[in-house]
Image (cartoon, helix red, strand yellow):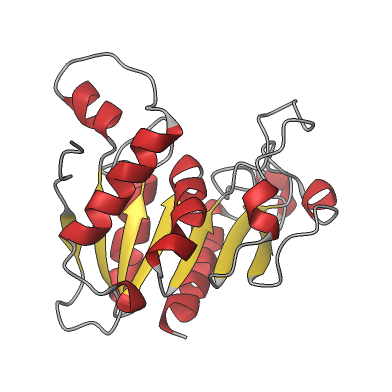
Amino acid sequence: MTPVPELLWDGPESARRTVLLAHGAGAGRTSEFLARVATGLAGHGLRTARFDFPYMAARAAGERRGPDPALVLLASLRSAAVATGVAPADLVLAGKSMGGRMATMLADDLGAAAVVVFGYPFHPPRQPAQLRTAHLQTLRTRTLILQGERDPFGTRAQVEGYGLAPAITVQWLADADHSLAPRARSGHTAAAHLATAIAAAAAFALA
């Protein structure tokens, strides 16, 4: 039986939409990136909920474990969605990297309002042939992918040739990496990019 994840809430309880945020492979629900996204979305009037996948909860308890298999991750995400108490039509699934990938894999079945991904892992770094895009070709749920132009998990030049489903919109952050951070010489800043991504995510979630 899948344990019910503990939810960490931000934003107004009266919000029209709730965003369920799933973390990436290396850092849990309290990571700086996810915390900034959660509070940023809350500042745009959204209710947000964060949770830890089972392996990350085990790490917090002192057990060293790698990421769970995809089926376990998906079951945990579904359990977290139910735990929000929000109807799927009012729930936006979102996540960083791996968490965002899981969101895209569950959204159609759950009937979620939308999906937002902060840095999709289209393939492992330096392994562009190992694509994680098959389900993205038929995804029906409205999806926004916020991607850095030089993300090693999928650059702009690579992604633009993938033939993604019409429901998917990819918004590019100039010179940004997998955490949406640009190089200093680009003239852009990580803070500005993250603010842009959060604003775009909020507008998409509320559309």
